[in-house]
Image 1: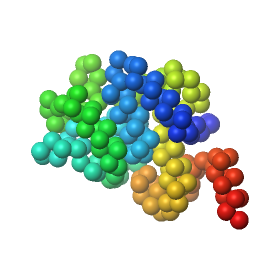
Image 2: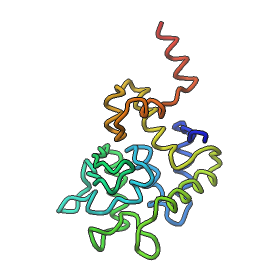
Image 3: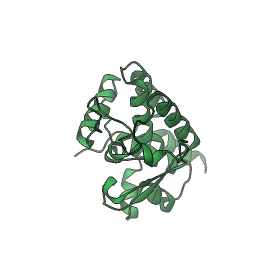
Image 4: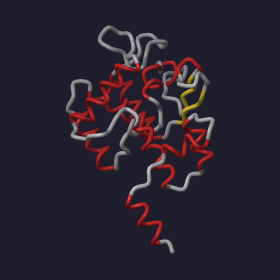
Length: 188
C-alpha cells in the first residue's frame, strides 16, 4: 500500500480553502488541522470528546490526554496543542458548544460521533474535492512529522509527539522533499 502524500503548505491551504466552502466548514477545518498541527490519527480525532479538550471552566486545554481506548496502540498518550490549534478549537467550540461534556467533539447528525472509517471518508473526500490526489486521512500526520523534522526536531521528540514506541516507525513518516534536499546541499 502506498504511503499517504505529504502536503506542502500551499496544498494544505488549498484543502482548508475547500473545507471553507462546505456545509460544516468550521468542523472540517478543525478536523483537518488536528491531523496537520497536532499529528493526531483520524481514529483519535473521531474518539476525542469535549471533556478531553476543555477545562472545568470550558477553556481549551493546551494538551489532550487520550486514554488507551482512544488510541491505535491501546496506550494512553498526550497530544500537545499549539497556540494556533487551541485558537482553532476555540472557534469550533464557540460555534458548536457542548451540550454534554462527555459527547464526541465532532458529533454526526444523529449526535453520536463519527467512526474512524466514516471520518476517513469525510477527510479523503475533502482532499479529493480540493484536487489533492494521493492525499488521505493520514497525510496530516505525515506532514506534521515531516515539518517537525525539517525544523530540526529530534526523532526522539517526534516519536513521543506521535505516540510511537519505535523510532523506525517515526522515521517512516518523514518525507524528504526536493527543496529540503536542495537546502541541505547548500549548507556545505
